[in-house]
Image (cartoon, rainbow, N blue to C red; front, side):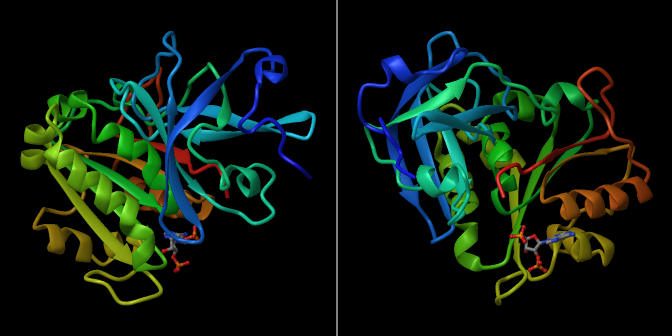
Length: 270
Ligand code: A2P
């Protein structure tokens, strides 16, 4: 199949309810992971942590998938963090985009990984695996996150060290950011682990929660529903297992219309 109109005039081909945005930056991390930035329609509003449908014309047809927006709501552009699946209907094409190409976006953001879905607390954990870090790349750059929580701990676990590059780079840049750098420097912590090669910390995040190694490494008390809140984003299996551990610690799941102690979103594109 050929991707048509990647760089060309998409005006006639833009499906109803979508806009065609221009790619402004592409960075590849590994054979499996990349991020890109694109223009943001002036009228497009979203809450940090939400996702949208993005896509490409593949032949005559638009192919859309849900993507967490990785940039914060105040950013002039939109950023996304993506996996590359060799035969993935969208990502086999999306991984080839270049600056100046067009990407389609539907204008309705949604999602549960938003500050509004949590009740206030002392400490916010954001547990992620793989591309599940994307919504947290947005939330850690939003001042509201630091107004609501004294301490923000984002965890990113991957198979290999090279897959941690995006979270490490984003957290480092956030600490230097003129708008939120000062807040982040005092309140944001990143914990990374790998499962298939040596690193400072190794093991699945679920194992490290269960055996207490996570809390010992951070120098914080074990999970406590009085003080701790959490957001989870990863594969279905990771969500299920992490949720079970949070519930065992006494935290309850919330939603936009029913804020509580933790919320979940699956990392969509696999
Ligand atoms: P592992 O290497 O032990 O499978 P994937 O790319 O398969 O989504 O995995 C991303 C990371 O999530 C890997 O480090 C993987 O560990 C881990 N992982 C996979 N399944 C689970 C699970 N059920 N709970 C926690 N972590 C998981």
